Image (cartoon, rainbow, N blue to C red):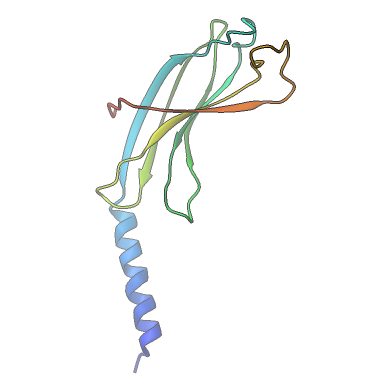
Length: 124
């Protein structure tokens, strides 16, 4: 006879496998412009990531795509992500890693990160 622990573990594993198969994959493209008000030259070659926010405690946010800004600070970044369950769409946001100095300072020694939620989503 199969003991209860093995049976419960098997049922959970099958349910997780079925939920993984049913995950919903969506693709997103984001365009924008990075402007540094304190240093107009620091918006070139800024790293821009398109991320998927994962709210479950055991998951890290997923990188969907990555790009760098052009000479004018423009970027286009796109990527796809899948979240757990067929009902669950990805929750994309933009993560910008920059060295724009704070107001009142001339330089920024450390790289800082800015998280920008995407409010209007039209999936590709």
